[in-house]
Image 1 (cartoon, one colour):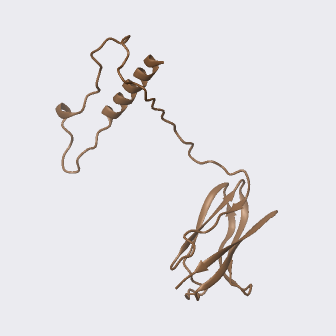
Image 2 (cartoon, helix red, strand yellow):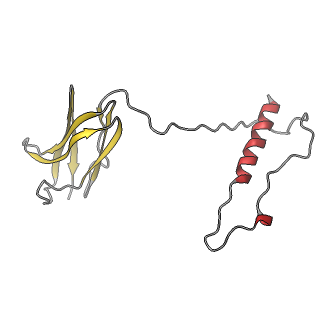
Image 3 (tube, one colour):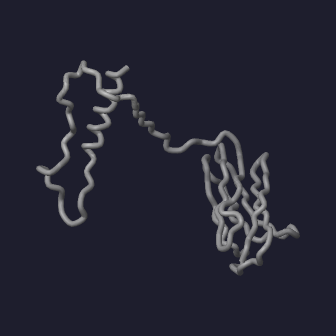
Length: 157
């Protein structure tokens, strides 16, 4: 167990020592570069106080969601603009619209085919004509083949 920890610390120290941050004004001096630390003690001697393990995980580029979902907008309540996140497990035609409390369509944020993945749309608090809408409650509705959902949003001017 302790040799595994020693090996991880040595690998981590080597990786950290290899990282350099070049100066914007001049090229780095190779003689002043940080060199990896190699312990002077024998490899079979336990390291004193070594009880910490470091694990590095690499996240996948993008995780494809398992089902359609419309997330709550953020920030909510909002003053100028808000972001609306939605998930698509497959490429699909998506309709994302904002409605007022009387059910009138304020603006269509999206009416097209999107790829699989998580997406974000921004609403700037304006209607389809570009005019600022009044403070109040608005509804964001997503409609795709076989799925629809509505979320409440609060605009404060």
